[in-house]
Image (cartoon, rainbow, N blue to C red; front, top):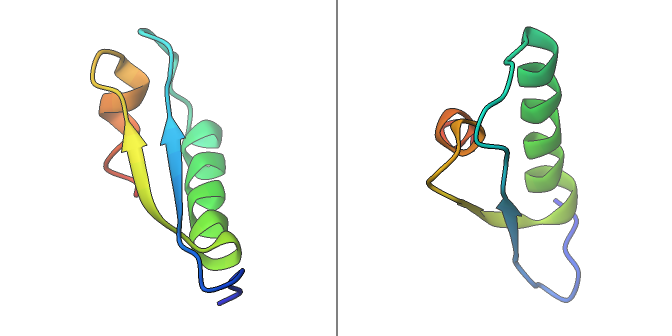
Length: 61
């Protein structure tokens, strides 16, 4: 794992209230989350609570 000054990072996700979910979008988001964890030392993910995007994808992290 790559670390910068032994720092840990937080990533925030905020999405639209309604979305059209696709398999491609799910795969891309999972890939991005994995890269944030392994390459950018992100250890905390924050999600809002009012949109479909946030409710659906908070389970990915």
